[in-house]
Image (cartoon, rainbow, N blue to C red; front, side):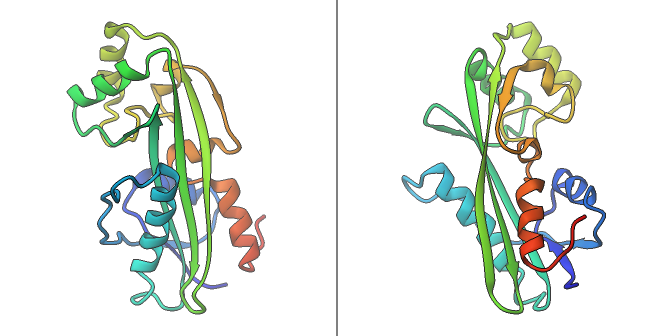
Length: 192
């Protein structure tokens, strides 16, 4: 088996990939994640997933490199990682009673051959009507300031949901394992 490399410094993605029981390394790619003018969200996450994987190909020429990127979309607005309490409060207030679509780009690059598998996995969260007090209590409990959409689905964030829909719940956390397993199988891995 070729060695696996996760092109990410995200602890959430690392923890998800550990579920597959495969040995891997992590390395943070150095890329500009700024959206291009008028770039659609799906195109953005595909591009960034590909660029993250390709950024490490020269330094890891024999690896299978996994790149992933995620955005949350509310209406036509991309919600980034809030970074602080005030911005997270604004994001969750806007999401209250609404639906937020999460798009997760996933890339698997065979650095030795240049073969690239690329996809985007959608997932939608339908939020309950949330009071200011509920939002504030949640943010103080989970501090999701490094999470797109301002919540942690693997934590108390599920208490904010009315329902969810999508092909792979792990995509909501940032690494769609169902699609990744298909890609790894196509690259010669036998999982399980």
